Length: 554
Picture 1 (cartoon, one colour):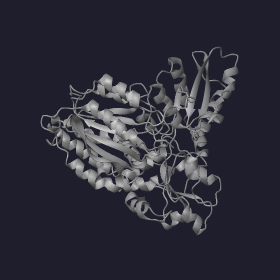
Picture 2 (cartoon, helix red, strand yellow):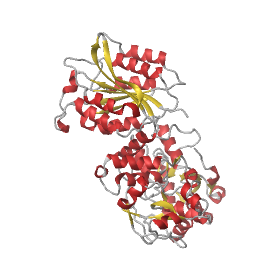
Picture 3 (cartoon, helix red, strand yellow):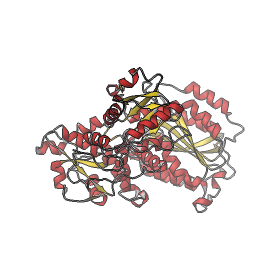
């Protein structure tokens, strides 16, 4: 993860002006592409007449920083992490003001109170387009054709001549915006597209995914001959700004920007005054926000290939061919639940795992779920597992257990399908899932089962996959003859090997789950606890749980 320290700058006159007295220092971490415009605007505004608040001058430090690094630092401040980002690097600090490229970062960070501000006005924008080499775009009807997702999706998923790619959407807002648009096929309701089509789109993109934007851009063809065009990257969601910047370097093969209808969520560059910033610094930051407006600022954005916050352009903006007009629409970021759902599906599809699924079969799983039409807790749990399995490709390994109490003698669990390649036993797993029925009078031998499942996954630990135990239960351990919680955590500590991480993921079903007890287990091994108080919501919870997996060794 790179921190672009070369962008750091101070308004030196404000720092050295002897008439200033005390100074208010405001640190701004801005996405690299907008940092120069913010820096130059602040320099112009303070160079001849420093910004003042109550007799004190405002000193502005602007640093260009990858938004993913700041997001990781914000989460790390709260002893947490965002899926796909890992832990904070320890070098990036949470600034007074953060200008990421998209409000979707703020949406993802609204996990707890006061992580990010509720209000963050936009100070620039850039549409998200499908970047395609011009010779390839011409075959699709560019620049005259108006593109819809219904036209593009079949080509992107089934045309062997098109090599698609994406910057990892957990790390890149343009990649996330493109993924959201592709996953919904232009429909507001992604369910209208169908899971199979969504999976197809994501798998097509995943074949060419890159961790960083520069890595992805390097895959576009460097020459216009047939071989280069056939072997290079053919299409990827990127910002209009990135396409303009790429073409400004005068490449042998220019990129076309395909504007789709409906348009993906544009990047909106929010000006976020971070919680915890002092009252004086917050006031100074608002003064800085006030100067990020007007024609001169818009012209500086245009020089960087960016639009104004309303989608309009400044002087000498290099408008790509086929652009819908001088003003591009800027829509609000989708809600956090929609973002989480798409990223969770992406993680399940793109991160091969080795997973032992363990399903509660105690008698309480017979209880009906009113919000799901009266079907049982067992039925909604099994259906969630079945739908999730449809996301996993044949690179996965999976196994299935059920548990209650004394299923085999004194043993509380029963192996239904051993851990093995999903490609070889997918139907066997589906059949076994469908055959799970609650045991009349059965209790929950949860702790004995958890330890046994952990040991089973450890015995065949695979360094190329995320190794995990996923346990679905609707209540607490109630086996008086088994391990206590203290005994379980002690035994887990004995068998854990930091060099061979195994995550336990606990999924609680219904209102009777003791979340604190489950968290003690997952805090011991790594992993996480997720509770669907309404069992009808377990499908969404299951996806979030799968997305948590992070410990694959590379």
